Amino acid sequence: MRKRRILNILVSIVVAGLFIWLAVRNVDLSELWEQIRGVTLGWLPFFLIVMLVSHYLRAERWRLLLTKDYSDIRRSTLFAGVMMGYFFNSLVPRLGEVTRPVYVARQHKMSSSNLIGTIVIERLFDMATLLVLALFSALYLVQDLGSFQRLFGTEGWPWYFYLVLPGLFVILAAGIWFVRKVLISLESREKISSPLLENIVQKARSFSDGIVSIRHVENWPLFLLLTAGIWFGYVIMAWLPFFMMNLQEIYGLTFTDAVVLTIVSSVGVSIPTPAGIGSYHLLIQQSLSVLYQVPAVSALTYATVAHGVTVITVLIAGPLTLWWDKARTLNRS
Image 1: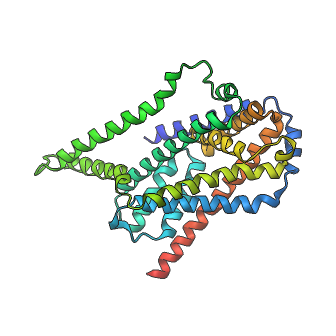
Image 2: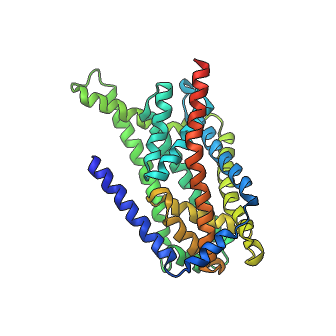
C-alpha cells in the first residue's frame, strides 16, 4: 500500500511537471518574472478575505449534512477540518479528502466512515453545480462556442456525447441506492457469522449513511444559499486578479469572464496533481489565450499569481486554524 501511494505521488509530480512544461515552453521566463513583479498587490487583502470566507461557508454547509447526533460540533473544528483538507491536498493529491473527515471524527469521537460519505456527496453536489455553470456559460457567456469546445478538446463531438456525464450521475445514484439496500439487508440479519464481515458491513453502512445525508438536509434554502456563496466567492477570486494586472482595461475582461475562468480552474484543480500545479496553470493560460486573446505570458502570470497566493494562504491558514481549534478545545476542557 505504501509503495502504491509513493508511486501515485511520483506519477502526480511527473504529470504536474508535464503540464508546467507545456505552459512555459513558449514563454519568455524573464518577461514572466517582470510581469509578476509588476502585479498590484493592493487587491490582495480582498482576495484573501474572500477566499477564507468561501472556505468558512463550505464548513457551514458541511454542518447541514451532519445528523442531529453531531449538531454540537464546534464551528472551529469544521473550519479547521476544511482548511487542513486543503492543506494536505496541496501536498498530496486527494489526501485532504480523507484528512478532513478523519480529523473531525477524532475530535468528536464520530464515525469517520460516515463523514467521508458526507464529503463524497458534497463533492458530487459541487460537480453537479459545476455542470450547471458550464452549461450556462456555454450557452450565454461564451461568444464563440467553438473556442470553448477547442479549449476542452470537445470540438466535433455529437450532441449525445454531452449526455455521458449526466448519465454517469444517474448510474452512480442507482448504484448507491442498490448497494445501500444490500447493506441494510445484511445488517438486519440477527448475526453475521464473520466478525470481519460484520465490521466491513457496519463501516460500509455508515459510509452510505453519509452519502445519503443530503436527503436529511432540513434547511434547503440555507444549503443552496451557502452553495451560491461558495461559488460566488470562487468567481470573485477569479475576478480580482484582473485588477492586479489591469486586465479589465487592457483586454476588457469582465465579471462574466471570471465565471468562465472559475469553471476552467475547477477542472484544472480536479486533475490529480499536487495543489493542481501545472494543470491549473495550463488550462487557465489556454482559456485566457483562446477565449480572450490574452498573450501567453500575461495569461501565465495571472495563473501563477492567483494559484500561488491561494496555495501559500492554505499552507499558512491550515496549521493556524488547527492551532485555533486546539486552543478552543483546551479552553473548554
